[in-house]
Amino acid sequence: MKESTMATIKDIAAKLNEGCSYSEVSKALGISKSTVSKYANRIKQSNLTLAQASECQEQELEETVRVPIKREYRDFNAEEILGKLTNVKYATRQLLYEHYKSEDPETACSYATFCRRLEKLIKGKTPTQIYTNLERIPGESLEVDFAGDSVTWIDRRGKKRTSRLFLATLTFSQKIYICAFENEKQISWMGGIVKALEFFGGAPKTLIVDNAKSLVPEFGRIW
Image (cartoon, rainbow, N blue to C red; front, side, top):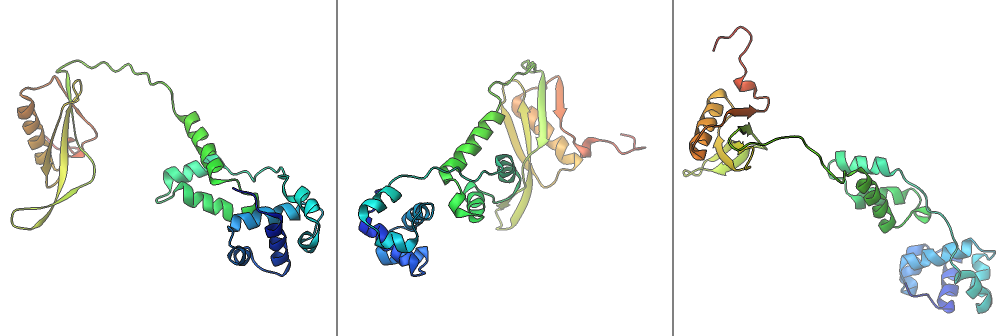
């Protein structure tokens, strides 16, 4: 950001001394509110009052406002922020930053710094290598399941229908077959498996099913 002239800075001090808000000063002088805040903070942390800053010699004012005042930004709990990003619906970095900043804008870090802290934390939690002892053999197994949310579609008669998607995946090649059913009842599972085997043109040694309640017999029931 380009530094303001001494005359403008003196005007900032004079307006603030009159009781104007940052927004009012920004509008009156045609500068950004962040610029008003920047020089107001530098004057506040110096030995000058607003009245003195508006009337002092430019050289004295130059020495006061041109030298940035070193300060540490207010810290925040990056772990907590990351948890909200992961678990709270509609939470975004921008919204969480605005909440953090609203507690005390003058001591808040910049949005860029806020994001860098989160990226560093995320990077530290991400494994650089993934190891697996899963052995995949061609034709050995087929994974079957009903996956995802229900899909809504319009049939030929213009009627709105809802279906569940049956998904079959060959473990080795990852080739997939998908078909739709009205529900996840046992007959739908059986129909999906038969259609998948017909599509792939053969049967694997093993069918891998993930917690399919419809395929588990009730206590005392005989298949």
